[in-house]
Image 1 (tube, helix red, strand yellow):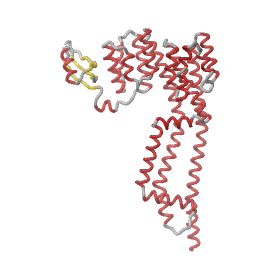
Image 2 (cartoon, one colour):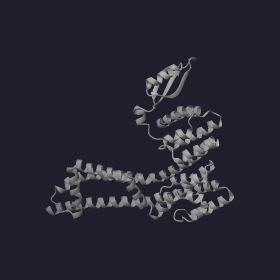
Image 3 (cartoon, one colour):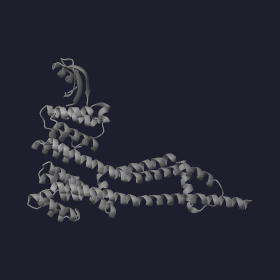
Image 4 (tube, rainbow, N blue to C red):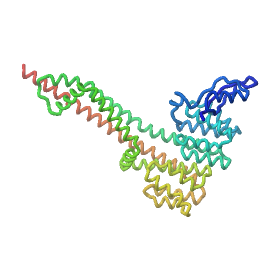
Length: 403
């Protein structure tokens, strides 16, 4: 049933703000009136433009949610009340709706993990598993504290990756913009001037000028072709099979392959660490953590780890048998953690180490990309200048001979 938020006056004249589930606004108002509340406003949290533009739940939103939940539960606040307070402070409409639903349903006796399970598109299996483990062990505030740490680390890691890609993205965007400006503005004008003169032009220059003339006469058609090409590229990257194929090709390149491996190892180690800290059994931990791997082949192989551990094999032995996936140093560190009973701490240290390695790899790749991009820009500009200056010299030569 739809969820409504409302403001109402109680018998003491105080304003009450809360949520209620009902078939429609009229039924919601009837229920509130029967509870001796004078309705002021009722808003459907799932209808209209608000839900259309609600967006998603970002990593930072989830990290803040976990941090505040940990603090409030440690302070002794009841779960529904804590959820309602966070809902009022949240600026994300999607998060407000989810929190309102959580507050309402936990008040009705449902567990937090059961309600969160209805929002699997916003909360991943690791999040749901940790909340479930916290409820079962009676340490929900610790589970939220660990989740906040994990989400914050993940957010910082993602921001570093994005930050390293900003410079190449800006340069490539500028190149594309300049190319479009040349094609649609400069070339058609130059073509009209040069082709109208009776001067012999080099074949390459004539080819470019003919192209510019064609663009000037068929601007709408060329724009349509460009838009269709961009749409096709977007579809290729969105469609799962082609995206995975391109990803597999990209990861075969030396530096990229190493960096993707480091990213996967960092995410896998951190996920294992955070789940073990929350008291999740190792077999369930391995099942859930496999989803943290980005490469489908690795994910498929790692799904078998839990069955091998259940048969008595140690995690370090399994990883040593998968040297193509995991570095030997990782397996050796895990063996130390297993022998000392500090596997969760060792995995956290490994996650920190490989996240730093990814940072260094990104810096190396971007430092290599920057001069290549500058060289590419220089070559492109040089070619255009030569092709445009050559006909000018031809025209001047033709004028001199005429005189």
